[in-house]
Image (cartoon, helix red, strand yellow):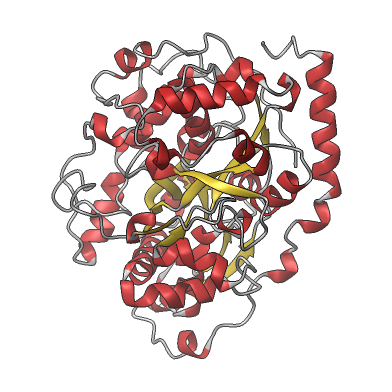
Length: 468
């Protein structure tokens, strides 16, 4: 189904979702909830860099009310911005599209964006405004999940981990569920088009033999609206960062269960990256170095086991997620509950639920690897998925050059090196088959061969419905 052949039924279905999303606009985050006053701890921090030596010490930085905001909240509360000579105004963004577009149009100096946003802004993939965005670091890895509603549970679908790697059995369950409902009711939501979350939803479905371009629709819903849209029956499933999965499970909102964490689709995947315009780096190189250093230190703070309970408490504040600590805590501390409706406990204790800095040995790709280091090969993987689903016509001939300009590992090595942080010497790695749910390795040296290895893929852009 191409962009010019949307059926009347699909259009009306989409229109209904638009109404629901619009009715929830009162749930969107108001800018008046931005943090306004530095804590005593932050004010007590003595700057090690004189703001007068920076080209632009006064910055407006965005964040979105999900657990991903933790390093920004910590940099604010603990004075890491101040330490590096920065006077930061934090701007609470209602959606990931706002976070990205705020940078592109100059309202924000920097902001976290979903993995895919920087790469796809460079290639002009469907849903992405073409712009020279750059990122030198990730904010974290993992920390997201897929939620399914009570109807999918009642049909017999269970968390992916309970299938013990038997994708055929899960595929039969998912196919059976889809066959039991009208096609217009098969709806899954993600937070942004051309994002890693969209690719994970498509990737998982295709690995089951289900063509996502033909057999269900994708909506774009801001994170704070996910739970309510499931409650109202607008959609059956969604993928989003925490705490909006934990909030859905029994004992909290009780509208769904966690089907899988993103790390079960691709272990070690990047989630958010710190984005700026290329012109920002060129005009304000000293300022940019201070910003990256402040964020590295904040990520290191968030990563320490002894700090994680405090971090969960900080981000529960009204200015950040506004969610109760019992909801923010599981993905930060690592006592993660998948939920369910049969009274069974499904808690998995793992600090790898969200990785802010230190990489576990079984996930690290090379000596010196850590969560905030960007691998350009991961940018190449994102391009293969954009091409796979017809969002770009083909993998760009200058794909490696695009990745190099988009994901600035060269700058990161310099900046992190000044902090004594050792980094990998390479920009690419071969992602092993064991890292992916379908056990298909990714060799960045042959992205075209990788793309052609998938039986289910699009040959032209597909319709993508955007609401909210």
